[in-house]
Length: 406
Image (cartoon, rainbow, N blue to C red; front, side, top):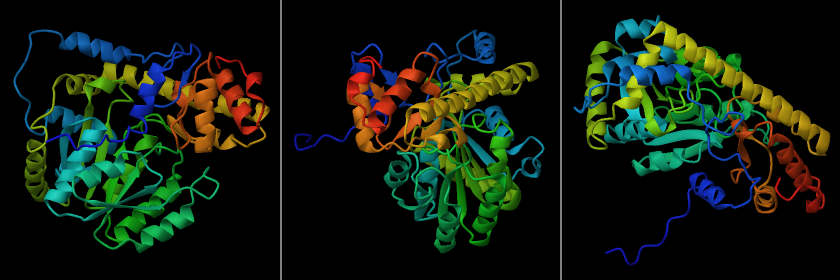
């Protein structure tokens, strides 16, 4: 039955990360996978998360969660992104489902859209996260791209994007990151977000906002702007959350899919269809990670501690961006100033696939093939070696001018 199968290609991110692990060079640098690392290269645990774990320790509770997950978690997650005083919250015109991380949330949304024949095509930015297309196509939906980056690959081409959105047929879906665009780090301004929301409403397009990095861009509240504008001005929309990054709960797979509806009555019908989509997929979600998030968000002291640590992380990434861009400016003939102007964990460096290959093969510095880098993978010990390696590649300097273990 399986003898005629051919091997699937490696995942462009996780597959590359496996190659990094196999690299024996001591000075290798991992700027691939989107995880926040501290100065020692470790994934830190929030003090609030550690305290939540302590509070949750006790008798083992093994019963299944409901299909849509922990209701209290769903409410707190929705309040975090929409605001606790959002009129929609009081109206009950929303449905939240606990999902297996942001990826699981996207798949729940894809299955729901296909199952209920809500839309046939999901439009996404060019470029977008490498897994977006695969997720929606696997559910039987079509995907198509609209322009996002300018010709230089360093900033937003707002005019081209808006012109393309104008041409999308009514009744289709538009998928975009709510903040900290992955892979580019390029976000619309608040004024541009308002124009985007106005156009989506006029064209009767369904917004799907992927929000995996709230708190890493302009701040916890500012990063919710796009979602709140949509909630306030458009009757129907979908928001996908992930708490992998902003709670450092990567392996707990904690996310949410939030559906915005016109009324509480419509929400009841929609909830039944979302539950049916989940039941046919993974049946119901795990308990522990969501319980940690619920405990932190539901306790004012823990929440305050979490927000303060998250803000420290955000500020550190912003500082790393500035230092990285300044170091590149000193060494390179190529302009990398755009890196300091981008937001979140990721940056579209502007390096070509050929340059990325040289960085990996000659210097042990790992970028994603399209030039995306995880800025949070930089630290005091690897920032300068990384910029020297980049300079060697983009300036066509003889490789041995850079330390062999850079």
